[in-house]
Image (cartoon, rainbow, N blue to C red; front, side, top):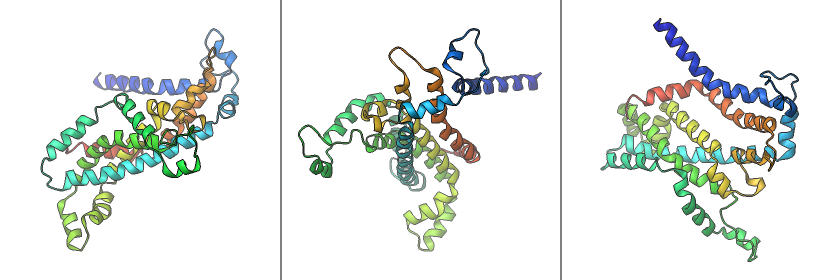
Length: 287
C-alpha cells in the first residue's frame, strides 16, 4: 500500500506538471472554429500548422526570439562571471564579516523587481550614450539605455546575482583546499586558480547557476515591458501579448507562440538535466 501510494502521488505530480503543456501543444494545432465548438475536443480533429505560420507573419516573432536570446545569454555570462568571483571570495577566502555579507546577499535576493522599477527607469533615462548623441543631434531624440539590450541585461544580472553567488559559494566550499594550494605552489595566482582548478571541479554548480539565471532572464516580463517599448526590441514574453486584440483572443496562435517560446528552455533543460540534478544535490551538502 505504501508503494501504491507513492506511485499515485508521483503520477499526480507528473500529470499536474505535464497537463498544461500538453493542452497548449494540442491547442496550437487546432483551428479557431474547433476551439469554439461544443462539446470540447481534446484531440485536434484536423491538425494544422497554420497557427505557427501566423505567429511569424502577424508579428516579428523571430526578432522576439533573437532579443530574448541575446539578453539572456549575455546576462547569464556576466552574472556567472561576477558570481564566480564573489563566490570564490566568500567560499575560499577568510573574509572578515563573511556571514554578514551572506546575510545581506540573501536579503537583497528577496527584493521584487517591482520595487526597482521606477529607480531603474529614471536611471536609464538619465544615462546618455555619447556616440549616439553625436549621430542623432536632435532635441526630440534623447539617446539613453531605454530600448536597448543593456536596459534588460543590467537589471537581469543584478537580480540574479545573489542566487548565483549563493550557489557557487556552496560549491566552492566543497573543493578540497589541497588542490588549490598545489596550484598556488606551482605558480598560479588566485584568479588563474579559480579558472583552472576551482571552476572546472565546480562545473555542475556553474551549470546549475547558469540555467537558473538564463531561465529567469528568458521568462522575465515586467522589466522587458517597461524598458523596451518598441516593437523591434520586444522579448518573447512581451511579444506574445501582442497577439491579443481588443475584442479577440486567438488562443490557438497564442498557444503556438507559447510553445515556440518554451521550446528553447525545454531543450536546454533536457540537454543539461544530469548536471542540473547533480548540481542541486551536491550544492545542498554544505552552505
